[in-house]
Image 1 (cartoon, rainbow, N blue to C red):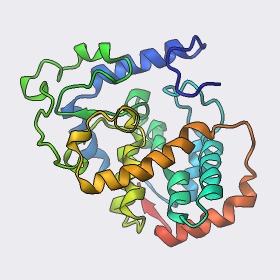
Image 2 (cartoon, one colour):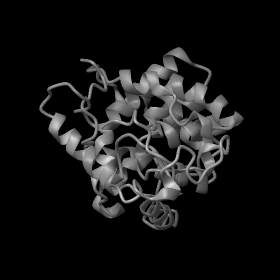
Image 3 (cartoon, rainbow, N blue to C red):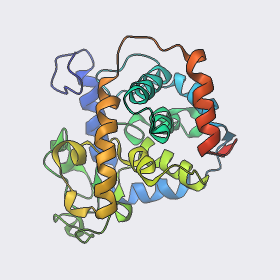
Length: 263
């Protein structure tokens, strides 16, 4: 199967396209600001990283044309593939395990957000929507599309301002970044960068919006590109023995995170 083929005539194509239509219409600068304020409170629940991994099995991601197996299988497939090739980068193994945990936003206990507010490709707001964004045509119905302040290449930003200063569409990436950062993870900045921008495909696939990046972003992007190869292409049918690998990942969680996190 060819991964990330949005034009393939699969039974999911229509679901995926409708998903992006809703995303492109509803993801506005003001919407993201509201979501970051609301979810930045981290007042939903207290639980461990592993508890969240187990919770994620209840989630189905409509934006992904390829993925039909439980989320935890995908997380462990990705982490184990990276572990094999980069045995000394334990932070990267853990980053792979936790990168999608923000998808719990789809569950009722986390507000039951619609799919378009949780998953799918992310993109900057506050500047023009790059033509390379998948299903770009639907942006014409986004309130920001005709806002003169947001319609130029740079919009409200300066070149080289750094992605940390750029508002990105709301979803599981930014939520998990907030959770990790606010719970004082000791993951290196490259780990946080991967969590926050792994769905920002226009940046790491076609180089769009690179002019907004600073030096640290460019360094971290190297790791994101390595990670991305595994994230997209480790979706194999080989089952992972969860109980066998669990002790290793629990030791990494203990190394880089507190026992309980606020979500």
